[in-house]
Length: 78
Figure 1 (cartoon, rainbow, N blue to C red):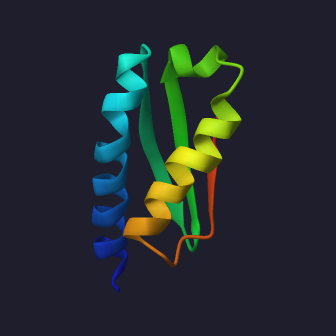
Figure 2: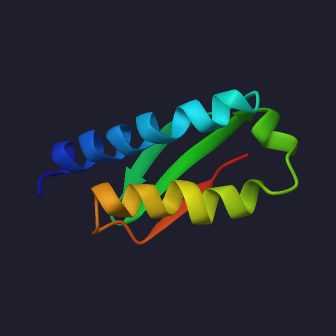
């Protein structure tokens, strides 16, 4: 898979997640993809949410891995 295809698949995954984040007043922005690590920025209500790490790992990372299995980790950059 090319880096462009990976980028496209990660964006598709984020598009699937966004409605859930937006319903709670938040959002997510893709910052970069470096090798097997995706860097994102949680926005809005997500920045101060006490369960944002759980959302990041169980929701965002799991969904991204479904679309792009070669991704190993998703990191939130504050």
